[in-house]
Amino acid sequence: MVIAYHLIATAYGWWLPNDLRGSMSKSVRSDLIKELGELHYGRKRVQPNSKSIHDFYKQAEFMLQRELLEFREAEREIIAQSFEETIRRENYTCYGFVLMKDHTHLCIRKHKHLAEEMILTFQEYSRRALIESGLRTKDHPVWGGPGWKVFLDEPDDVWRTIRYIGDNPIKMGEPRQVYPFVTLYDDWPFHKSPRNRKR
Image (cartoon, rainbow, N blue to C red; front, side, top):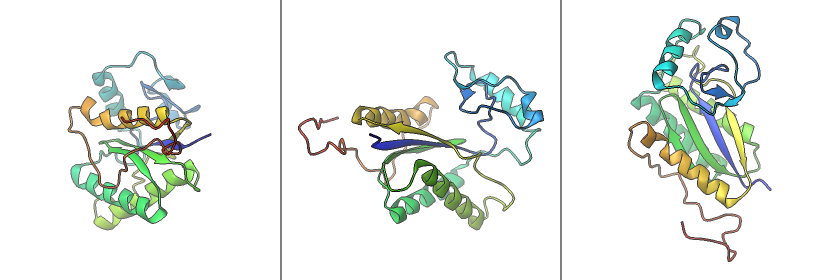
């Protein structure tokens, strides 16, 4: 039984199908992008160093149709505000959220909306908010495709995902991110049973 989703979305151009770290893509549609390297389905066991990844995207920058942009501080604020409005409007329950310079992670409780619908909703409203704020132009896609989803079946899966999300900034030397729309997980849907544990 699925109880929550781990949703991942990347900024436009920042996690290409043949990324050196591996990806969930099964094909590379652009002949130019294909020249950057081989496709590897799934995350590679041995990860490349940061310089190799940086060099990969310096090459990719000249092959993309649109400008390769990171989420700067002002853009992160707009995106986070848009995500908060979406969570409240759609009545989602968010257990974890982090917004990095080139991707975002969310841990969302199971809802009447499918995981794919949730990602699309977050992307559409945040892109609109960035355009309205003047921080992005209408011809820039902002997000790099439909993103990814991981189904979480047990409370332990949810707790592990929450920790993983929270540690993302720490690994990059940034402070831990705290948002008012993130709800403390209580072992739902087993929160009223004896198995409920303090974390």
